Image (cartoon, rainbow, N blue to C red):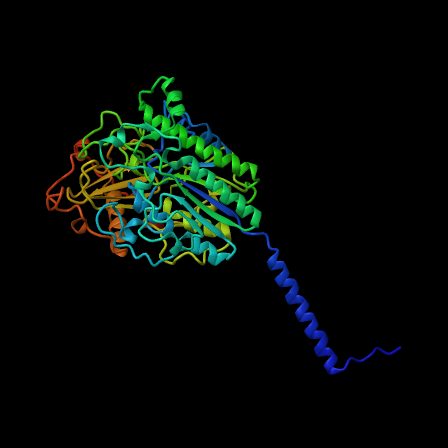
Length: 503
């Protein structure tokens, strides 16, 4: 029999039905797409690189505490990847927290010090806005210490504690902060964890992706702990590096609180689609109690083998713990690639499916490739990692200084003394030997990159800082720290330290 011929109107009807069915299938598929991954960011306060009972660098097994016992943090490090060369973007808390939220350096943000004026343009994208632009289903929360002068809701946090700071964690700025005392919920560690678990549980129940940041008030002063923890550490023999009982007890409590979170992470079956990141806002306290130091040598530094600590751009002030557990991350692995806090935004966006929503002037790069291949190449701008602290601080180095790390080389520039120190931090972790005199070409290269970056972002000059007159006395004060490194004459190497493509 001859085939039936469809009329023109019938063809249109069939085509319309086909298009509608195709659109319906596409929309249904979109509705049932597997959600993007969840993210949990645990930000501790003033936690030193060598504060745990395991080392952040497996090549240096002794680079750890000789008193603190941290089974939960040790387990987390062994369950995923640790980063031996991770940095906070600032040696003090608020600039570092801004940097994480906005994916930019403190120099670019114009906020490099906790005290004094705040020149930040608060009308810019933060992590929750970037994630929600990628997938509107994201549910977001910030719990704990915020330390940003704008409401978290402004940045699309659905759940938050408001504009919290050190005070909400029990901080009192007098000598009593170092005495130590017992509380049922010290520094709100356990209530923060309980609320975090509730948020994770509810998000999973709703079947929506989530971003959760838990910003602990510990280990910042005041020194607070549970009585049982104090009794536990009191029964142990103090170490030669770490021996403060109150601080050790607080570290015990922080470890247990993070351990409770990790147990919930496992109990809820989150590892297959949730990245758990743990890091600190800056390096650890160099000594307890805090003291006016003006750059002099510490007899004993709490961040050994790193030099100095919080308030300084030496390694002890900016190198921090950094651990990640999550999908396809090899257990007990380590990456030695230098990374920094302002990389977090770009990394989460990449893992969520798109880097297009990351601001064009972001300083961060995605470290996602490292999570499955620890030695994967990371494309970073020629200036590498840049740090800027254009202030006087009497409990620190007491002179404005900036730093840059490119590859294995780190340069620290002192603006008033007009001197730069150069270290190969891959070989000289403790920054014991200044090699600037023997490598003038390298110094010139790094100084040019550092200066160029600071000019490009319009970073504030030391004389513009709030600490210029007091205690800096109009720029006359010079740090005593440089006495540690005598300027010996040395033959200068002709070659630089950077590859040709970086120059």
